[in-house]
Image (cartoon, rainbow, N blue to C red; front, top):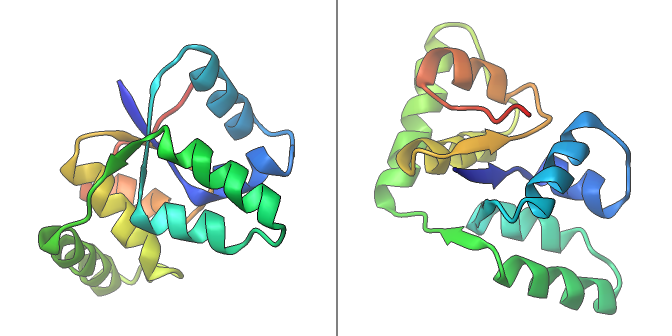
Length: 132
């Protein structure tokens, strides 16, 4: 099973913030699970790092992950997800979450996250969410 790990989890993981989601990521790492990332997550994680040494270490760690590409259809599906939910009165606060969800749906992988914006995408759009 492949798991796409959202930015929210990586931030807590690197900050050593204890949470069930971080524990799930740590378990996936111990089990040598297929952990994925995509361009949006990579960018979000790396842009928040201030120290050069930490940036290099994190960049190198991300190079060891499975990289899921984002193609034209990914961005189109992202807009469709956003519009579909908005028509139902559910506005996603961060449209990049629709992009991340789109990549997970297209690649049929589960998403490990700690972000309420993904809940309606799971409920109405077929997003699979990883639970330990």
